[in-house]
Amino acid sequence: MTKKIEHAEITSMLHSCFFGLENAHNKLTGSGHKAVIPEVAKMLPHILDIKGDLKLDKDKSLDENLQYLQEFFNNDEFFDKVVIGKIDDNKYFFQLDGCFLAKSGVHGILQPEKNTCMFVHIIASVIYLKTGKPLRVSNSEFSELGTRTTIEIV
Image (cartoon, rainbow, N blue to C red; front, side, top):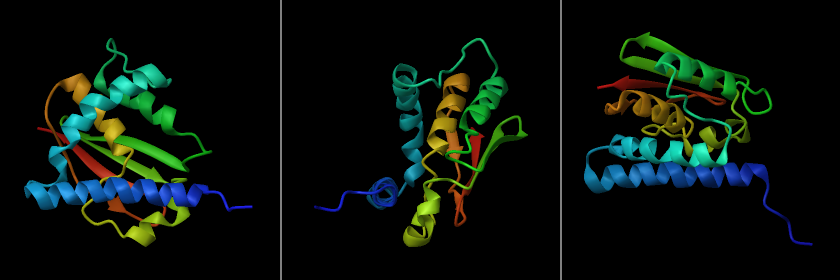
């Protein structure tokens, strides 16, 4: 019997692809991977709206939508803790502790430095859709089991 792919391999491959695309964009354009984020933010909600329970409530404020998103993500089957916090009127942070993907050891293996946590794009998409303004997403600060990322409305 042939060995079948396992969760840890899928995790490592997805992270490798995602971080590799970010790094390639930076090398090709010199403008940094953050130029891609607004385009991802435009597309992602359309998929989520059709395929998932996560839906943007156009009648609620940005902060209310982010609170819903935080509650939605706080599922201990996948994450130990998820916090979406407001730094000021134009700046938020996303902190993910005990991520089920990171628990595979992928952060230690890939040692990302100038990359963004994949889940930040979901948070950024909600901010983008509610404000319609460009975003500046910092490189994520990666720990062994989580990340912290700042998202700024510019």
